[in-house]
Length: 369
Image (tube, rainbow, N blue to C red):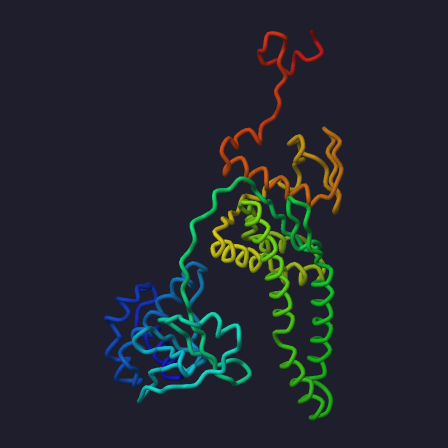
């Protein structure tokens, strides 16, 4: 792993920053990577590919590529093989090819049974253990022909609300995050003050707590996304969600206290969207993001702008009163129906007044004769 990381850093330093093609990088430094770092042919190729991929990502975010750390190495079919007969993997290292037994659970055994994966990633986790992340490929089913649309409104108080009326309260997540924040603040203070044993113990507890909050939020998002996709599958529906890209940058410009800023910045809406999208692909369910403008301010009954106050929505035109997030989810569903279902153009239209002849009546003539 150290040789792989050193090779990536060398390639990143020797090749001009604007070059992102893995083939071009390989042509320029391939021989050096093999001679200087002792990598096999395909490990050198994978190092060039990683540098190219990281540069493309950094270019999209307008950031420089950070130094590569010796925590992982990429493997393809020429330097990696999985053997089901003895549950081991064959990996090309620096000087030899080794067969290493793997400790696989029932879930992993079920996924790998009868499969012949062709790529993997060797990783060293924070606990010091080594893991092999094996990638398997499945055929994507044909997208289902939709007859319905499920709108999903994302939020912090309610993590998700669907147009069918399902909702997932975010109070538990907020309480857990606040609890861990208080615990971290207390431990960090003790880790810098007190006796030597107190500081050491505080650092050990901080390390043990690391990742628990993230894993809890991940588990919640998995449960929500699974339920939504299964409901869409059972009703032949597609899923429409809000495109909230850039919302943190916009909300951080508003004056807020420290607690609200922390809660907003820890909102994991993008992870929930990602889980919905990949679970939808697996089940043949389309997940499409729609513009969020005015979805929470427009009444789903009459399509007029209403008044939203915290969690309540009131329409001054038709008089509908109800939950603001449910109204937003229904509006997202209407947007989806208007563009994704046959004859959907009639879902978002206003009723125009007509006179006795059937012609449109001017609003200026209403009540004036």
